Length: 151
Image (cartoon, rainbow, N blue to C red; front, side):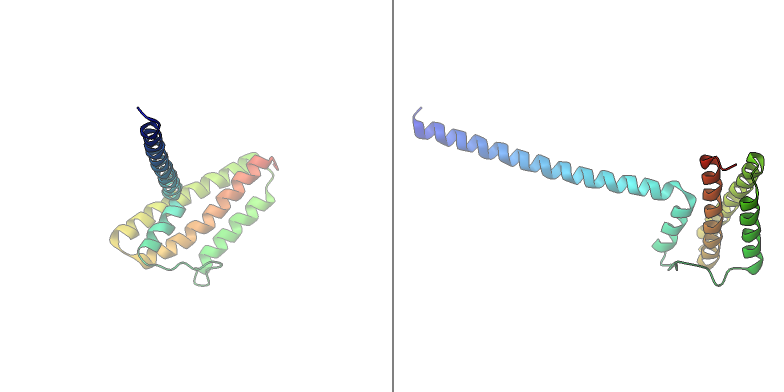
């Protein structure tokens, strides 16, 4: 083999290696992006509240941020009373009882939400979602109170 042939073979080899390496990096980047999307989808679908928001948005329901001016006053009173009870109690048992009650309400709301979505009743689903948001916030407060040991 002469010098030109060896050089040509080396250049060809390097070109092929670079091409494979470039493809490998493209595939790796694509895989990382897809993995990230799968993880985001899992987190979204894992929790009833984020899953309901996602499904409603898929169906074209616009969700406003902030307070719900159309919320039932009796419901808002119930939420306010639960928040007050939670703020006033220092008993581990009472905080746990509030948390259990809220989890039961969220379970019921989730079942009603699923039923509404299956029936295509998006208005009811949107109203239930608003209630789920309130109770999810209370549930987070319960978790924080327990975790912080403020009892």
